[in-house]
Length: 115
Image (tube, rainbow, N blue to C red; front, side):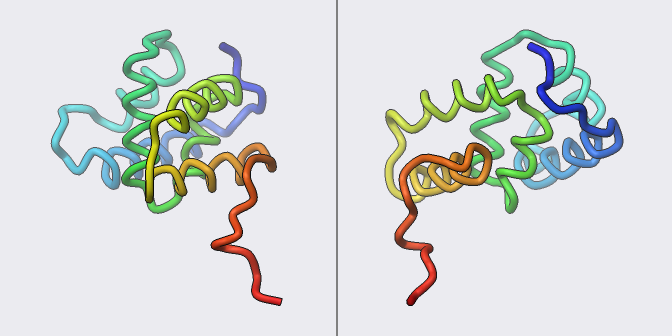
């Protein structure tokens, strides 16, 4: 899968550093460079699904890191799969990510400006 938008390699590396720190908590033997390399060269969808899930559940800025690490096609695939079974907080986070990245999806009335 080719990246729809070219991102600066430094931006991607910085994103992987944050993902390793925020989302993996040092519980796994995976460096930022290894994560960057696997995300850019591997077709291992199980690994990418796992990283997507970790970012959704643990990142302070999930939309930012998903944009940098995943293609739009992969993001749509993972969102669609995840939204089928997600509940409560996770479902809300997934809906926010969908709105942030694709600009569509259910309106999040919980976060609408009070008029």
